[in-house]
Amino acid sequence: MHLVITAPPVHTFCSFSSSLFHFGNDLFTLEMKGNGLALCLRGYHCPFLPNTANHPLLTKICLMLCLLLCLIYAAIHWRFRHVVVNLPNLVACKAVTNKDNGDSLKLCCPITKRLTLSRVNIDSAPTYLDLLRLYPDVCNGSWAPRECLTRQKIAVLIPYRDRELHLRLLLHRLHSILQHQLIAYKIYVVEQFGNDPFNRGLLMNIGIREALLRDPDINCFIFHDVDLLPENSDNLYLCDAHLRHLSSGIDEFRYHVPFSNYAGGVTALSKKNVFKINGFPNRYWGWGNEDDELCARSFAHGIMLSRPPPYIGQYHAVRHVKSSRGSGHYSSFLDFRGYHNDGLTALSNRSYHLILKTGSLPLRQQHQLDKAGLVFPFSVNKCALSQLISELGVPVTALLESTESVRDVTVDQERDLNEAARSVLYTHLTVDLSPIRAETIRPVEKTRESIFWFLHFYGWI
Image 1 (cartoon, rainbow, N blue to C red):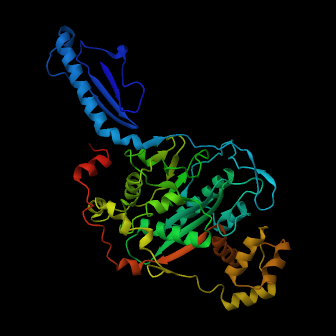
Image 2: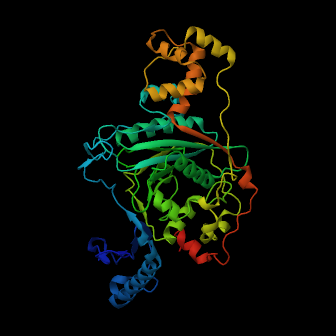
């Protein structure tokens, strides 16, 4: 016997597969589905009968009890209707008028041909200079197509500490995919300074704040873990009206989400919705639960969770030593409705310190470069060239004149260029969180959720 019960909203509530009916051997299979959730009970023996084939009345009783169980399950999981699985939304590539010069341009549409993205080896991560050679049109981590108008201007925020090999692999993959999708983007790497426990949510909020201070026209944020590499170029890095969970199929989870409300890894959220939910929580010091609270805040404002099918949202998790969940995080999560006190609105210029990069090359090296010129082995755009000059701290002539040279780059010069290339490939924000670390974040009173809500959120009941 095989019984399938699907939770609403669906057109067909129950269906039966007669080819699997087998009463004589007391086989019993029950499958319940509800918006991506599935519970299968296999090998269940009907306790009332030794042989259900000879007792049709009691067989009906068993079926009715199973149906009742499925209805209870469907009712409990009715709230999971706010999770939507859909394909990336492609807007028609119609011609529009450019307000700046009056020219008629088409809206940018991603290239339909899928990129070939091979598995990577962490030991063979490209250098920053290699990446700059591959993506010479990037400057300060930003790029935009010239032949069409983009629908959104996105900021990719990467919280970071002590993961340089992962970062180089991710930069290679992101620049490749985002340019293939014809998206106007800028990559921000927000690095936490010091030895305090890592605070992913706070770094995201600082990244949002600093990105908008530099470019108020940003209207979409991508929150990206440094150890997740996208494997499918059809997974569009764009925002929709929901909380868009892009990493719906991570290999370490066997390309499925661990629970329906999971929003960890890589997510996209519009600027409007970011401010509506007050961004991320700031109070989670250590790993875990800040992404769960982002999802809970969204649900509290009627913002649904959308994700692509797992075969589209495939990601490879680069192996590293996992951190343990921070102490008291689950308990703190029950207070999530106090988010009006904990988030973007709690930040100010005194909440954190930006650590500026000091100095450039030593004076001795600058003097040598001024005389001999720094050989640059390939051409880049003027913006990137100016950024390199600024990072190296050398006169303009020391670098510009050498671009016409065909001499090989020395080992010392390659090391200097490789370090300077980082500022071209992404915008680096190093932040000291000690000021806000000393503050006590108190949620609004009488906001604690019940244990039933907690278990229901994680799909345990």
